[in-house]
Image (cartoon, rainbow, N blue to C red; front, top):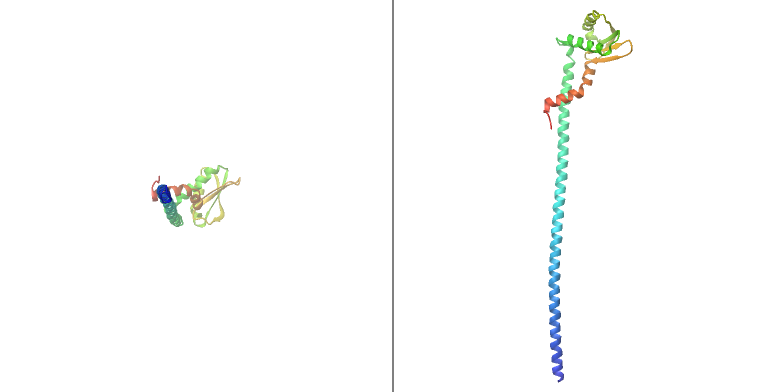
Length: 199
């Protein structure tokens, strides 16, 4: 075999080997491209999913914040309306002693205080406007054999009375004290009247 034939054979073998290596490289490149595209697609999907999750979380947080703020505003508005009702009721009660049935109200407040204490002797305190009515009530209650006296001490209350025993026990049945004691119950009732029963 001559040199030219050997060279030609070597060239053929080299071309064949080069073609084989090129084919392997092309296959590998295609695999890399396919794998890279799949990884890129997977990464893209993961980024999109993370973004959607973040948006859902942000929406949930915003909804929650809006709900909390709304509930707070509604509660504050309800409390304001209830406070207004109590303010108007207090204004109305300032004139309670001028009402026609006030004498029976004062009699009931004094009698209720006496029954709460159960003593041998009672001392009643009222405001200046109620002195004359209270004297008549005390006079009527003495008929039942009770030792009741009206103190010269004058209350600054809107109305009602403070009833004391000789043992130092006292019942504050002034209008303000009664309103204060029943405020919680009245708040509930006023809420029901204004806003109805809430679930």
